[in-house]
Image (cartoon, rainbow, N blue to C red; front, side, top):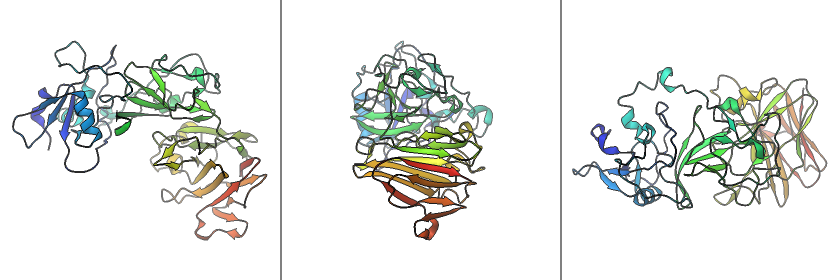
Length: 409
């Protein structure tokens, strides 16, 4: 049901009572809404719309609203208002009525109501957004980064200034102000109740988690808080980039470039972190330390890479695809790279069930101390015993020394 008669009463943020299920909705934002950047924090007023009650919208405090969202007693009327519930670690001003001078924006009104008066979402003129320009915290080049060992200054850099001076490399072609991914989140008592993924043209602003590409690995991205400043999310490290445990490389023995795209994780989980493997060269491939990296439900996580057909640029390959070409998330082959106290674990496996396409070159693992053979050749997977049953891929352990993913014709 759409509450068309509640537009005037919605102030700046709308909530609806939950419908008895145990999860909150996280819908994609309506792309025709516009976010207006203004000086100072945005003040949010909350109202609850309960169709079972005839007394109309009921005002509640920010604490009641965020607690209700976190406990799944409330849900957003349609689409989450990303910055309305900041992290409990951030000082939050008490909400005031909409008659104050604090400006509001159309993006903070529930999108279901906006859709009643806007052009249809099928129109490309209303859904297409211009790419957000990258404003760097200092001059830098996308061909390399400086300041990799410099400590990141929490709370000093504006969210709109991409932190290239601390090792991050701007990915301007994604249209996210240089970031590899942006998520607008609702956080209460360190629990995330809603996640809205940014689209091309969106920016890193308060309430957002902003991840980045680098010469090493991202260690949790950056949080843009209500003061519109960037803060580290991984308290174990003071730098934006760390190299992982090292010892894993890509060797390209062909005459064409190969785009290797890492999943933005933890983050949007799109394969937007690029590595261009040039002909005749060896490149480092990040192997995260599973004992000191991101844990999902208490479990160790690793890195995943997508290997694209030869000759495709990282700008084209390392972003979410639509399946019309075997690139990006539709690339034929994945690489898995992980580490625990027992050593490194490296794998080559097909990108199924997403695609059944065959890569137009071969991939094998070479190294000093590999537990077995592992190669992908002419569309088939092999270990030391021969073809692998089910053609499901192969994994090897590496106890010491270096290991190479070799690309060859």
